[in-house]
Length: 333
Ligand SMILES: [Zn+2]
Image (cartoon, rainbow, N blue to C red; front, side):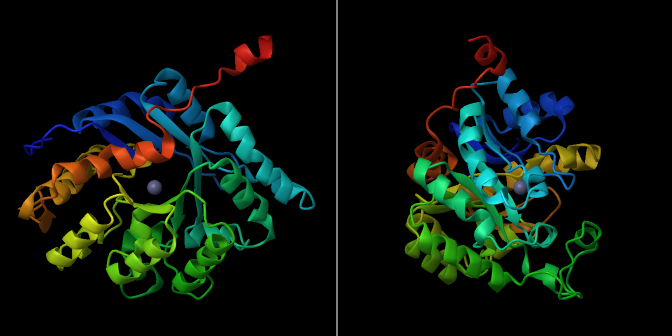
C-alpha cells in the first residue's frame, strides 16, 4: 500500500474465500496490507452447498494465518420435522472440525427471502441457544444499505445482483432489526459481530443505543457502498463514536474471491479497500482516494488502532486460530 502507515499486527475479520484456486491471490492481498492473520467467513449457496470446504482447505494450508467461520448447512430442510435440532447440532460439529465461529448471512434481505424463516423463529431457536452456551462467535450480516429498498436510488449493479428490495416482497429494515432485538433479548450473551457496521453508519445515535443495550456485540468495518462517505459527514461525532466504542469495532475489508475473478478491475477494487479503511482510521483530516474521492480521516491514537486492528478480534476468537482437526488422523484413531 502506498500511504505511509505505521505497522500493526492487523487481523482482517471479514474475508470471503469461495474459489480454492485463488488462495495465492488472497495471500498477496493480505500481505500487501500487511495483514498477518485473517478470518474467512463462509456462506451457504442456493444449492445448499457451502463455502465451508474451501475455508477448511485454506486453513489446512495456512493453519497459523486463517481463522474460519462456517456456514449452516440447509440440506437438513429436506426433513422439516428434525430441521431445528439438526441445524443446532451443526454448531458443535463445526467446532469439532476446527472452525473458529459461525457466519450467518441469513439476515441479508435477499437471503432472508430465499430462506423464509424468521431469524427469531423456531427453526433457529436451538442455534442461538447452542451458540450462547458454547460461546461460539458469529459474524452476522443483517440488512443492507437503505438505497436497496428505494427503486429510484438502488444502484444498477445492486439490482443485477437481486438486491432491489423495492417490490414489497422483501422484509423491511425495521422487521429485521426487530428479529435481532428479539434474539438478543432471549440470548444476551451471544458473541455477535454485526457486519458492515450493522448498516447504521448514518445513524450513530442509534448505533450507540444498540451497542449500549447489548454489551456482547460488536460491529465490523467491512464497507458497504456509502459507509465511509457517511463517516465523513460529521468528523467530530464519528471520532467521538470510535473513541467511545473502541472495544466494539473490528477491522474488516470484505475481500472476496468473487470480486477477484472479475479481472483486473475487481483486483484493483479489492486493493483499494484496505487503503480506504486504514486512511480513514489513521489519517488526521481530509484525504483523497486514488479515484479522486475526498474522505475525512479520524487520526485515531495507536492504542485505539491496536484494538480495532487486532485486540478486539483476539478477545473474541483467541490469539491464534483454533487447531485444525485433520479428519484423516481422526479416522485412524
Ligand atoms: Zn461479506
